[in-house]
Length: 206
Figure 1 (cartoon, helix red, strand yellow):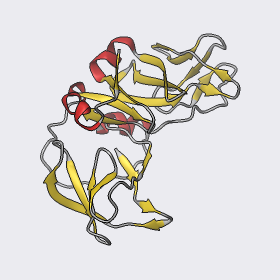
Figure 2 (cartoon, helix red, strand yellow; figure 1 turned 60 degrees about the horizontal axis):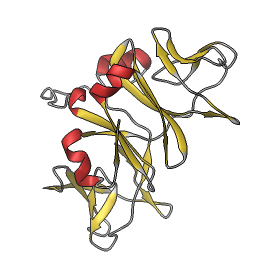
Figure 3 (cartoon, rainbow, N blue to C red; figure 1 turned 90 degrees about the vertical axis):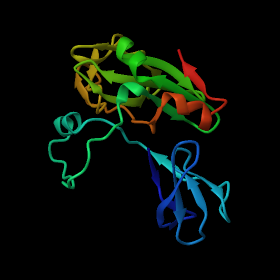
Figure 4 (cartoon, rainbow, N blue to C red; figure 1 turned 180 degrees about the vertical axis):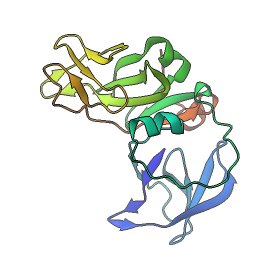
């Protein structure tokens, strides 16, 4: 997950605190020494305890999947060990403050797209049918209409209008709404066994 490191209009400088909380990384901020939970983006100790950072859209995927969708990306190339993270062990989480929902990656791969409502916001949680390492969360609301999507080999289909969208980028590919881009919503991945630790009241799909 990615958070905007800004509070009250001022940037804050964060570092790795070095300890785990709930089996996940913690940060500390140089200004106050407060300790922050990475999954929650919330200060859990110190002068800023209870403050939260804004979540911004991001994705955990493979380099092949990302570079295919974004061929002009510049990346830092350094020697590193192969990551032990596997998408199939994870769930996509939508956290809208008043309601949180999780969608297992294996379950999403079976159905392709989940049309859901979280905290009164209509969402589509999507796995690319042609690349199971690419996932996204979009708003299903376009103007006054709420779309119900299906996933096909051609892309993310709105069967009512016949419009097909890119299932990773949300850009229109063909059909009457092809000039529109779906609004991408903030979401992130967690290990499925850790979800209840951070979101004990959260909902699990299905």
